[in-house]
Length: 227
Image (cartoon, rainbow, N blue to C red; front, side, top):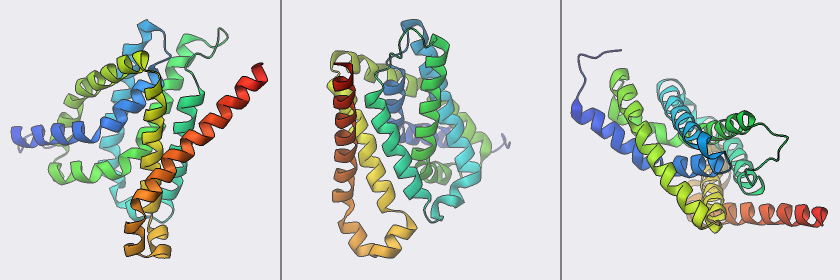
């Protein structure tokens, strides 16, 4: 790493952009960790934020060039839809047969997968600021961890008071998934860039509605089976 060319302004820019881009990550962290035992929530949020930051670094340094690969966004969008549904249907309490440590690692794994998908686009803005200065990138992202944890903590408190926000958070992930799949190179090639641009809002709405509909049907079937 090159520490000689570190710039305080550059580090602050990386931190600021990462915080702006990490709103959806804070939502995922809060949703995934809401069912953890009280004493493990902070651990889960810190590990989740740490995974998010690590993936930001990895993607920015190595795989930003993969963004234009056909079908990558399509697959990522489908995976994000699945995660969104799981965050609703898994109420976070797996029963007495599930150990607390298993719940913790399940939550961290969920955060890791979701962030890997959502980081694909975000890394471009961060890379543009860092301008190949690895030290600036890493320092700025690491400093961002407590800010992301603070955001996740606030969202988790809101989820406890307003459980309906769990559905809203999952719908947000579905919204992002719809946008991601629409912007896959194969989708744009098939639809044309102009037509694809006009479909942005409908695709995002469909993604959000699809998550809510699937989650509702699964929860309803689960309730009927329990009855």
